[in-house]
Length: 233
Picture (cartoon, rainbow, N blue to C red):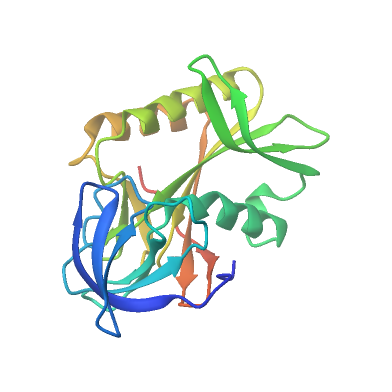
């Protein structure tokens, strides 16, 4: 996935109210940017970090800038926009990078399913049983291990239960961890942050849900999934 515009570089001043960030652009202008990430962004929101913003021409938006990338204090480029995850995974399925999900003739997004009134991120369909793919964006990496979630996520546990139910009904259920950085060598549930999610993930895997994790190459011109990493529950 290539960015449609040249991103604007700057320095993060602070992130606050969850969805806002103050940034000083390289030309000295100070702007407030929308932060398209609902997590805590542990390790990715340190004041002084190098960041890159996109700008919208939509006059209806309250904040025209959006925070897209950050360079961590360790020098790792990270994509923080969770809204890109589904697109990244779909692209990687279509171009054959994610060979584990090859062979389906159609891919649909945001399809309603399940007993808990959910929407599946990607529904893959073909000659055999449907494949339900729930995508989770990952930005937290410590000492080579990626962790999810980076904040308590009751919604995340709900999605795992829904996937397990689809497997029980004869479908295929996949939890896909989209790691928007390239320094991860494995992924683990963040039990210290959300023990319930970790427990629910392990239950879902025992029920037949598959777990995939891919890391991404992140640059100021684009992001793409490049490498599968093991999920260690």
